[in-house]
Image (cartoon, rainbow, N blue to C red; front, side, top):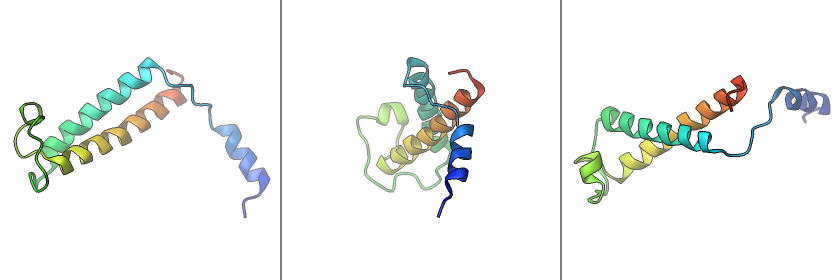
Length: 92
């Protein structure tokens, strides 16, 4: 059971996250593109899943649905960390 004193101490130290703004969307978009680039370079077993013929000119051959989902997911993790870090420093 969590005591109310501990819960109150945690709530005082966490800064309020502002409402979504254009800067946050920009940071998230940049992080998603970075995540896709890291997935394009870092994944070793490419092309094991469904192919994406419409995105083939942009992402290249052997970059299928599993790689796309992995890259976007990693980009979201990077984006959330970046936005929370920038919020804690007072830039957002």
